[in-house]
Length: 315
Image (cartoon, rainbow, N blue to C red):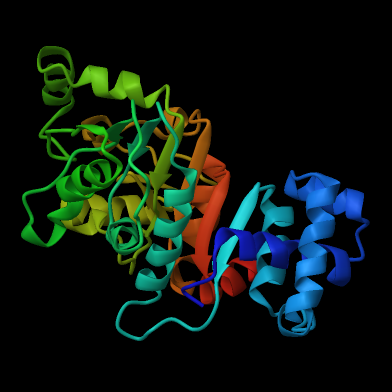
């Protein structure tokens, strides 16, 4: 399944909408944002390849059905569901990362301003991110990093992403969590980091993930936020971490002073990006995914099948 291309995905979506949902060719055209002649060609290819039997007759549990159901439920332009069960050792991260990398490679174009977060899933996308080198692109890190050696990709991911693309890279040279609001203000005002946040408000593309930040969550924010504060925020209803900012099940900020100590693009500004790509794996993160979707309204969601099934159960 790792060799499925964007064109194949479009073909299968057209097949499901036409044969599975009974939409007209014009309705499929409107839904997919392609011409009616393109839809006709896709359906002819489906028949020639006999893919209808494989993908469309699979019933409501197929990955395409999950994707369409989630698009409708959350008003997302496009959802990609990676088929199959997660490998026990990575929780689906590698598979989702590969799908994300292929998709991002196809999205690259000249003169893009791209903002990136960091995390396991985004780092895994580098295995399949092989874009054509583009001119005029800039990559901006959307949050600070950490000296923790196990989170080294906080700075590595934006740099490697930009290198593959042949783009300029602007890192966020700061810890994610600083000592006080005064330190944050000083860093932003006196060290030129405010310019990074200003760039973040004008993104063509934002790429980010979400972590489970509940009482027993596995979010990387656990390593960065003091344990007592993390416990306080969990008690206040925290379920998700997006760019190290903790939110509740409705996607609202958790009211806590530490929010004023974070070196990261505010989520309200993240939501202003022209295209927003959220990628995450794991059924245990379903509640966190729902919160992140509600808050940031991604235009593209890339998840694995267990997460899709669990997320559908929450709709």
